[in-house]
Amino acid sequence: MKALVWHGKEDIRYDTVSDPAIEHPRDAIIKVTSCAICGSDLHLFHNLVPAMLPGDIMGHETMGEVVEVGSAAGGTLKKGDRVVIPFTIQCGECDQCRRGNFSVCERTNRKKELGDKAFGHATAGLFGYTHLTGGYPGGQAEYLRVPFADTTHIKVPDGIDDEKLLFLSDILPTGWQAAVQADIQPGDTVAIWGCGPVGQMAIRAAILLGAEQVVAIDRLPERLSMAAAAGAITIDFEQESVVERLNELTDGKGPEKCIDAVGTESHVHFAQPDTVLDRAKQMLMAENDRPHVLREMIYVCRPGGVISIIGVYLGLVDKIPMGQAMNKGLTFRMAQAHVPRWTGDLLRRIEDGQIDPSFVITHKVDLSKGPEMYATFRDKADGCVKVMLQP
Amino acid sequence: MPLTNITGITRSEGDPRVEHKGPSSLSGADRLARALGWFSVGLGIAELVAPGRLARTLGLEDKEGLIRAYGARELASAVPTLSIDKPVGLAARIAGDALDLGTLATGLHRDNPKWRNAAIATALVAGITLLDIAALKGVKAAHRREPGGGRDYSDRSGLPKGREASRGLARKDFDIPPDYRAEGSVADAVPLLPSQA
Image 1 (cartoon, rainbow over the protein chains, first blue to last red):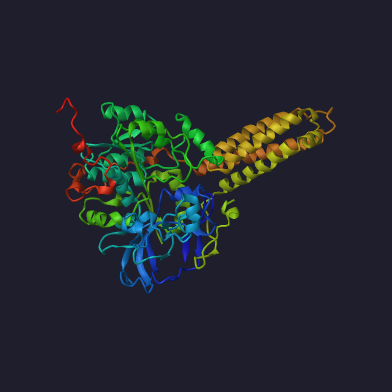
Image 2: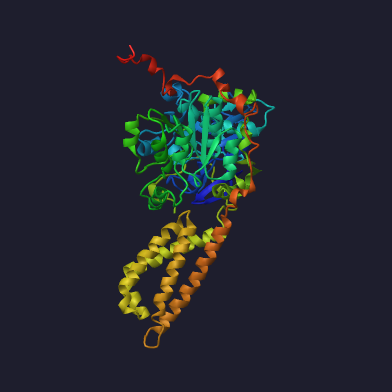
């Protein structure tokens, strides 16, 4: 089959690879109909996580049709079912799964020892996202083996386009969880850093949850225009001070809720010297992440407010002002999205016409164009916000 | 070089294996930049480890300390050249090439018994400079972002019922789960202050 394969830093190739096969009774094989490149795939593209092997298949936003079912997965799946595959693999039985904390499932990371060493305790297995999370082949391919398939799928109805359903796999529930983690209440001002795909979904989620003011922060005009389309107030951080504008919008008190939809790779520019220092340290492997957004959020957030982190961080961060956070009594919530916890509700909202996630797709191309689309997405060229790939 | 080469991570049995490699996301300019970055590493180590030998070969015996400093500079420019910020590294390399050419020029006179070596080194550095310039132009062209891409997405709300009709729509049938409540109803439980009683 064909697949997008990681070969090293900035080196993704459209390779021919052997077909996947059922390995365990709970497995299923799906024929991929649509997949997408996620912002967090770029961290692997940039080789920021030293746990990829040349030959690893990329991708964790995938949907398709079931073509083969293991003997123990047949109770919930059958050939021909149309499914979206969550980026988290969950057993559905462990203590964390029973609590709804699916992204920290205790049983699906098949390289638990490695995960334990890296994180203290291993997190769930993820598709196409390093050997720290199981080293499972990803879904930017023609076929995907889904482990624990009886609990790792979202059945979706016919009659709704892939474009509207695909993002149930990640960015829609991820953006939704960002808003839920912030405990958004009517009347709140919610500031959202980053207008990439997850930030865009978080903006819509904040509005659906009743935020009075949603403020979107980025520097790219096309992304800010997409944020404004949903009713967000926009701040171009290269044109004005984020802190001053947020204080103006909140009578000097700061936003109650702050969402980080940027994560490890904050934009680097000389007007913000900490970003330059972070980048230099990152190059020398003296720091894993560039946490400029986190610093700014802690500084501007209203005392007693909530910091919701959904942008991916990888490891060690420097110069986080914990004194400000502690003295202001901030609450921090963060996690990889517990995808299946939200997808039933979100599928209903798509069917009901409350949200149409296809708005975010700017490029829809054949899977064979994947390598060049990685570069286009990374360079934010051609107005690229979200790439959908079809084998 | 993937760090997994030294961490001993291996792929699981049964996972798909590459049978035939296809086209890459790396452009020709990216590959040239990478080669120049590794060249910087090699030259930098040589200049740091054996500056005396290089100085004698070029007839620049009084510049041993300077050559060692240039070695450190080469390594410093190799780091960004091998990173995703290649233009920064390549620009640093071009500035370094200019310094190298200036230093070599001081050995291009007949009084220097090694002037032929200095001339050959000058020609090599000039050639490398051209490659650096070509790589910088190529990388910038390959990864250029047109301002805004001319795109305007102000018609993409993603909220089919309209912006204002959508505000708070989910609250009709969704409550923030208890484990995600940050504010809760703490205020109701706070005892009144004496002035409020």
